[in-house]
Amino acid sequence: MAVPKRKMSRSNTRHRRSNWKAVAPALVACDRCHEPKLAHIACPSCGTYNRRQVLSV
Image 1 (cartoon, rainbow, N blue to C red):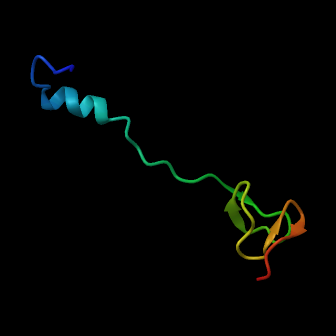
Image 2: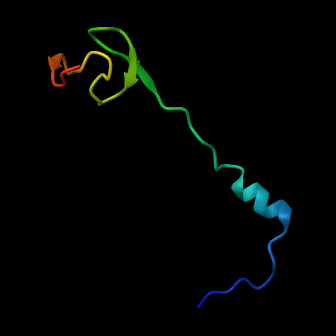
């Protein structure tokens, strides 16, 4: 079993974790109502997906 030979310093740990970032979701405008929505997801405000009505809102 692999075990670290030395304790990792706080500086090295923080440098390694510096790339752990939360990314804001990419929003696109709905084709019908122009509200922001997630890509490849049915629009929560009008219920359309790919120019078809898929949800009753």
